[in-house]
Image (tube, rainbow, N blue to C red):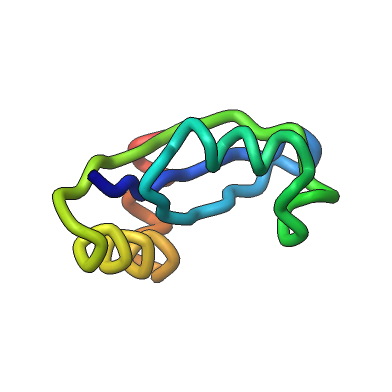
Length: 78
């Protein structure tokens, strides 16, 4: 199982979008500061995720959420 997830920074209220195969481990990496790209924006809260059956589908959803249409979708959902 793969997951596409959306985190919200409690510092600047911006969203971070990614995908992974172990959602709990990945969130822990973000919140502990092990991930360089999000280290300065921690702490985070998980605000949305989707489970996908394969890696290609998870990557496709991540790219969609990073597009204009995907961001609009997320803002209506959140």
